[in-house]
Image 1: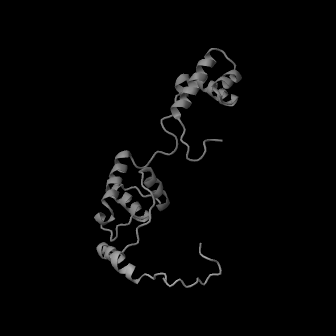
Image 2: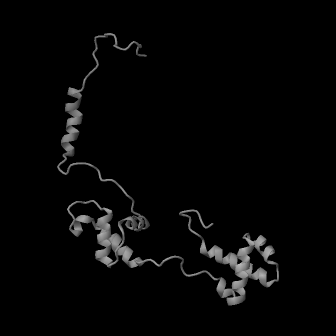
Image 3: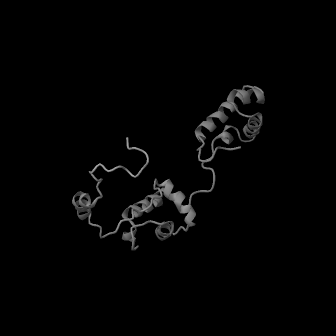
Length: 175
């Protein structure tokens, strides 16, 4: 069945469980008794017993790494992250927005490794970066002028409630 999506396996704990099973098997316990004690299916213990007979305890030690080896090493990932922090403009792009295509091109330029744009998001997530939308504000925006307008001009032109006590157009009375 495997692990639920996104849940990392604790390889050290799995190895400890296999080694505990090996000790129990060497004490001549039955495979089903070992399975019950270490909390696994009997078929797993059967596989481990076969491996113990073939390769000894060394065969039950954990593998170095599962899955395909990464194409980028830790040094290359740090280099890419530093380039990302400098921003797209530092690399000659017109705007300050990182896109999947730009990051893909950056990775290829810095390391020679080419990824599909969809996979670039996984790498960014691994580096602790998240997808964010840019703030839609003009570069020419004058914050001081906007603050002044909100403080002085807006109250002057804002529609005020009439003070003559005229009845509301609503059939409900204001409470």
